[in-house]
Image 1 (cartoon, rainbow, N blue to C red):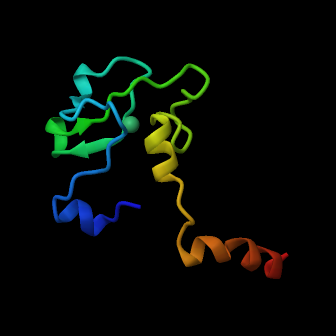
Image 2 (image 1 turned 30 degrees about the vertical axis):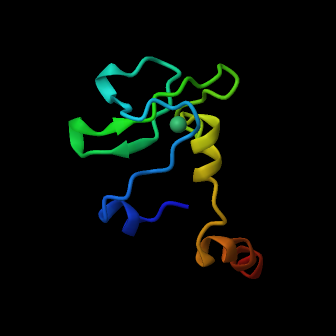
Length: 93
Ligand SMILES: [Zn+2]
């Protein structure tokens, strides 16, 4: 998992095989192209841009505007507090 510290250190995000290594800026992205940010800031941010299948494309839902590689990358274990949330809710119920 890529950390905030990696981003601040300028360490580039992992890339899927065959991915355009330069990425694209948001204005150049077509629909159904991966929105995973790779490098850069603001309007100069470059996104992965690998094609996302119609079945996987569901913008607005976590990871559903990412290619398969970046969607898997974005699905982590969660923080300790996030993992504990169901137990906390059970105690409160
Ligand atoms: Zn991607």
